[in-house]
Length: 428
Image: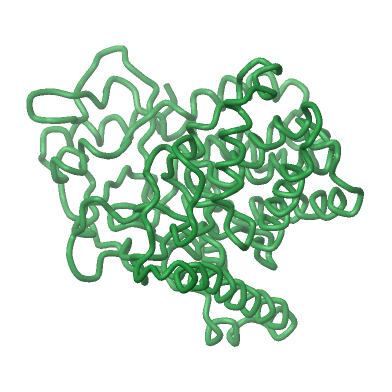
């Protein structure tokens, strides 16, 4: 155990006794991408951002117009609500190759096609096995927060009827592209699936910010959704899909040379923004401001912080890259040093009669907190009312039971690093 881990453990022991527990602050809403904020950028950067924002607004209008036209044609006054489900996570990506030629696979593929937005992406939390989208039916299911904290909730949708219409959150869009790619490389009559894949890749390319990052939702919706989003592997999974497009792998060999080149350039820019957004001497935030790449909050209980789980996913992604340049090697070593320093031993985040709590567990670990305070590396925990605490056992029962406050994800990165570092020594 490192000195840093021992100090962190001692702090946790004190906190577990509620001797030092305190509310340390409150989460505040991050800034959206706006014309006013773009004007504050260096003059050389403003044109690209203005063009991006204009494209986003125009595409949003087109998306709305399609559904408005269907409502008018069908005489419906309100949108039909699609069935909810696990959406992208329910799409089978690990079946035997022959399964993707079956009637059931093609039935699901046609449903996937029907829910592709005019912009080319997909929403989340849909049941993509139930039925094809009907005229006048929303492209998105119910993506509203199941538990609201009241006025000013950071997760409140500007338009409750138009929320997450096109997103990379929860594996959306990337999983649909991968599923359709498995269909498209089997048999005949696959042009419509290839066309949909092309539109999906175009969506990812169009959504990428001028600085190389991606928002959670595109066209832009505002709020924390405009942040460069590493949460749940959104950007790393997007980059992996685009890298496969560039390489013509995993069912994407049919993609033309121009799109392959665009994908390769997009990946390079995405890697660059990952390196530029790493927090000095630490790892990465869950999300960063789109324009200045500073860490920002998201939902009420997701404060500005270094994020253990998201940082693990980013570090694993960087270690997969062939022939990493010195900047990548340095970023990996910096993150690994931080993982070692912040590891927690002797505790487990477990269920009990009083809900999930951090409890002494001799011999347990390592685990890592979901969030660490910038600068101090002290674990912090957000609550539904936006308050930030230094003791997970002091937040509300609803949030303690409803969120992954501790996990072992960085251990996977450390295990991979043991092998990777032998080929890529520090400073090389």
